Amino acid sequence: MPKLDPVGFVENPDQVDIDPITIPICGLHFETRENVCEEFNFTPVASWGNTLAMIEAVESGEDKMAYSFVKWLRNALVGESEYERFAAFLSRPDVLIESSTLQGAITALREAWAARPTLPSSGSAGTGGSTKRTSTAASRARASRSRKSPSARRST
Image (cartoon, rainbow, N blue to C red):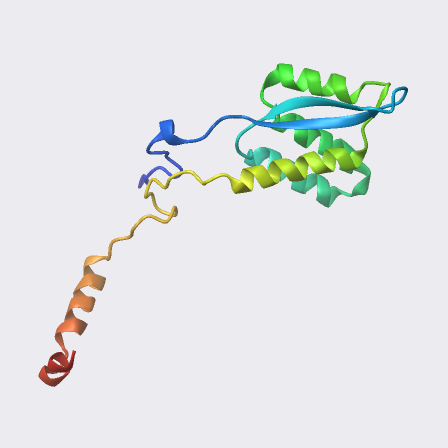
């Protein structure tokens, strides 16, 4: 059975920006009517599993959208302790956090992910690396170049 080259292999992992993305999420305190903000650290790149889960949630209907937003953000947080802080913040009975705030956090995170440079290509198949001609194709290409008439070669 043939074995293909690795896909997605990172040649210089030490040059990849993997610092977390910090997003302050704010809500309105009911009594003081002041903004209450906490900073949360999110993963530096989008997880495909998390992205597919969001797509499935959107396709399943509106009744699960709020839950899907929270779950998507939770899965993008860095570590269990960040999730616990996030869940505690969202559960505060004295702070109003609107669903549009969570949608805004998702948008900000997606924009931050999109603005980061992509990983350097390993040159593996399917990643934009150079491809080599087969011997038949190379032979045909050489043959077609050598068939130019002497007058055509002089004019170029």
